[in-house]
Length: 458
Image (cartoon, rainbow, N blue to C red; front, top):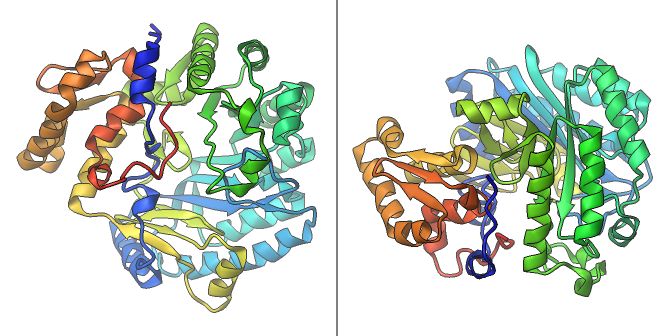
């Protein structure tokens, strides 16, 4: 049952903190980690065997939405996608050469930008580039992000014909004033039509993305958006709090800061979301996802097999994720490796025959332990110290139990967790503040100004 936090509790826990799509988090990565280090970890991944996950970043959009926090190239020139695919083809070949026997794929995700900026021929070519080097399992999850405002039914049919079976559509908000302010004009009817088209084409998973905390959102307008979303009956929703970081994304300065909902208003918008979606038959998954009870994601949470990565919550994480394209992030062989953010830098590296790595981090043994612990908190809303001991040994359990006990009195007094000496459980109230619970185990936050680089947790 949903528990509403008090205003005092909201103020207490409203602090900067990671979203934990990785651990160590991106601010801890270093430019000292370059292609030679990445190739060492690719070699480890090659020896490990098993299926891979693949990610492809397609950065192009027709317009730059003012709320966007992604690495985007805004253009109307579709020929730039052909040039991009020329380079992507070379990068895939470069990296695949270091995985001579590990070519099976259980999960593929195309993100952006807007992958459907590419026309049908370009979409087909992009998939062929990957299929030339990798083999997709018959039950592989192939997911793609789209913008309904620019996506045609023909593109939907093309993607389905290529084997894509999950699709995520950005909605953000249906209110006209909000849409005009953030530069994302999108009708309810065209969104509903594409949901229907995706299902007719054979997609068995349709996800809609929403954002709360945008300028001019009110409880009344947001309630109307939520009602319309529930009526479309997507399989899943991802509902993100708007991260206002104009020092990092200068185009966000175009938004009217005075129209942004305050902390208390943001919380009420999210609570509205939880009430509307759980009342409509959806389960709250982890931090910010919702799924129908019969959906694979809801089943995975109940079974304890859900995982969190850069694409959010997932049910089929491979041990290693190999990523391609500008600014994409690989997670292989115990390390994170990120490609350059600038298109020219990525292109120059690939054209010179170099694997294009700009920065990264090799995980220590302590990182691996804490990544596991944080993942359990963020995904399963519980941590069994017995499982920690079984996987990592008695000293690891002792270290994590010390962290638990260091913050236990405060978290239990505030009603966020329970602890019986063996299992730390996140309460329904704690689920709304689960990032704060996970932060208890983040060793990097103990450094001076360790949390100041992140968006706020509320």
